[in-house]
Image (cartoon, rainbow, N blue to C red; front, side):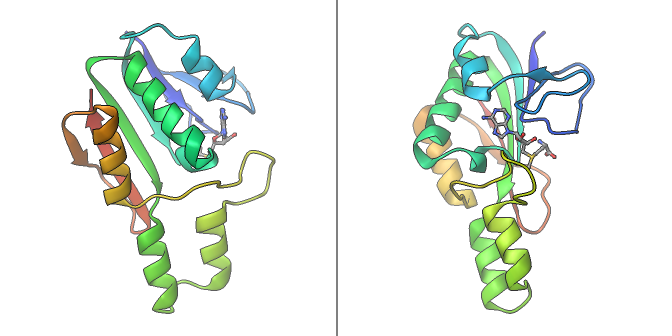
Amino acid sequence: MVKLNLGCGNKILFGYVNIDLRGGNNIVKADILEYLRNTPNNNVEEVILHHVIEHFSRRESKIVLKEIFRVLKPAGLLDIKCPDVYKISKSYVESRTTCSQFNSYIYGGQNYPYNYHKCGFDEKYLSEMLKKIGFGKIKRGHRYPMEVSLKALK
Ligand SMILES: C[S@@+](CC[C@H](N)C(=O)[O-])C[C@H]1O[C@@H](n2cnc3c(N)ncnc32)[C@H](O)[C@@H]1O
């Protein structure tokens, strides 16, 4: 049973192939898109993509999601989380988020080369993108206040 934790950072999950460009103990050092492109169709039960999709450009982010759809088995699960640009912007405009926090949520921590955000999502935009790619059932997952969290089935 193949389960992928893409862009794992230091959140290593037991039973998953943990993949990150930065490598580390029990981590496959690889680029997500390259790894996916070398994975056969209908091969993976589950993909975790937490706080990673925003690290790709708008064009690449669609390619990553399409590749995930391709490698998932029928009824395979994508568990995706990312910053919610709508909630972050609303919170900033209402002065509940400082400019410094806003910068970090929207543009990334910027404390290492891969920690920069290149695109943004809200729940509606991401759900519609997933539907367009072909995902069937899409449900809201557990989420923190500034997050989009979706679980989508192929
Ligand atoms: C904000 S961290 C999220 C880490 C973890 N998923 C979590 O939820 O805490 C984003 C991670 O994605 C990795 N990353 C960014 N672009 C990547 C790429 N093209 N291929 C592989 N890993 C990538 C970064 O190295 C970083 O560890």
